[in-house]
Length: 451
Ligand code: HEM
Image (cartoon, protein in one colour):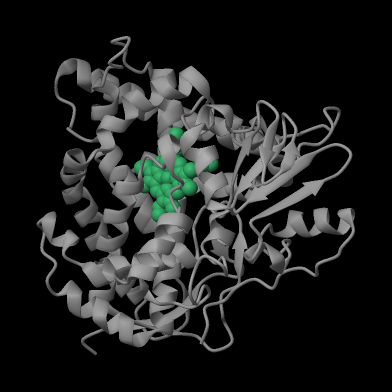
């Protein structure tokens, strides 16, 4: 059975119908031709946007001249109350300075140090899931969300998700997402400047509550650093790293913005990736058995994760078919020429991992689940041109290395323990919420493997 794909909209619809569909779900709002096109222009009298699938153009925007294609302010509009001046939203010198301080904490050697905390989070997830392993249908998204949130809290602040503050942050994030979907219409399509952009007061209040909880954690940590008894986790590393250019470290206020994005970007995305991977394995029992078998070699030693080759290929393939961040938006800052078309200053440039990863001219069997492709020359060539679940270039996801370890580790630990099965009549329908999720939940049956 082919993994589910949203039904594209008909080729011709009116602008208003398009906007309505877009509001419902940005994936099914797009026509099928985007899986074949190198570029698509969408223009009305008040905005222009260009979706680019041409690898040369993507390279230009993300790698060759990234400073000329900053993030649009619109994308920030929905997030600003929560994320303030976080690295996810800033541009120019502010962004560069923030990356200089953050990046060293996510480098290879440092990742090794986060491994024990990830391991404990994986064990805790397995214990929780045993309570549901009765062969009855369960929505596993809350489980993967819980596990990913636990990983973030343990690696960042050395506290488990059961910690009172961590639990409150987690709960508040959930209600924030319900009131403020992040990939909203305004982010993609700049309306006329007179168009009001309200935040529901509930959204603002929730953002405030989350930020004050995070501020509490951050202030406490600063005191511990000053007293010399802070744990050696990601928060301490980031807060004690000085910008090599200016010698300055983050202030508490700046750190609160960064913690908010680490939590949001780190847990939502990994939760989505893990849920889709488990579904794909339920659909492909032979791969599920291969992952379970490989997981027998896993030890508490960091280097044993790198030996899980099949599990990594499965996870990569899941990120190809269901990239948690389906689309990204940039803005032109000067007139450009894209594929012989003049593009005005201020136009929106949409990069779509979703379409690129399933592009009919760039992948063989684009909609099929085939982890073996990662070992073939054709697969490797496609990956070079058309695979960017973590974006690419200087603005690549800070947590890419972290996520590849976390994802493979949790997957191996969970699949070693349980056997997953699909539920008839409950095929997940991919939709873009904050990340790519299953419209009505991800329903699976699972039992302990030894039964
Ligand atoms: C499977 C898991 C993940 C996926 C698929 C993913 C994907 C992405 C993508 C596509 C972007 C670029 C967005 C854009 O440019 O508009 C991004 C940015 C970012 N991600 Fe991730 N991410 C994942 C996990 C993580 C984790 C675990 C962390 C941190 C612990 C993290 C932190 C960030 C941050 C801070 C940014 C902003 C970087 C910048 O703009 O300079 N992500 N992520």
